[in-house]
Image 1 (cartoon, rainbow, N blue to C red):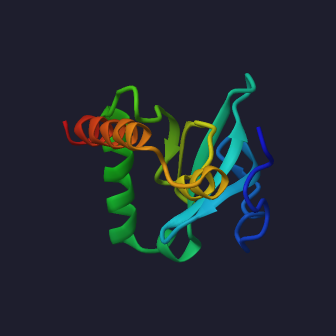
Image 2 (image 1 turned 90 degrees about the vertical axis):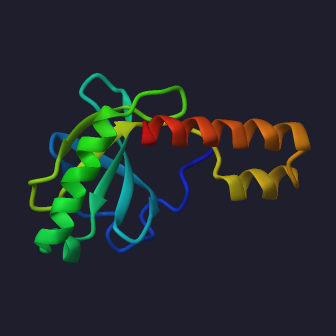
Length: 137
């Protein structure tokens, strides 16, 4: 597996160093609401841990939405969704840990291999549709 994308480049990638009992090893990506880190469980299982950006952690309305997200994510199961392993929406910096699913981003895949063949694109969209069905069920 190639090295993780841009580990440590985001200002929040280094902090916090832990989410609950999970040591955050590398930054997988950053979005509008938080930073996703690679971490490991005590048994060595790889996890993706979303840690909320500090300004949102101070917003009670955002915390309520994050609690709802965690509760909804825990109810989802399916072949195309990552299982929630642990979460703490009440932490100073709320976080949620899911199983880590290794693989390239869509952008990396296209850059490396060019446009997707029609059959591969159909499989991808079918998987996305199944994931959305599972999430909204």
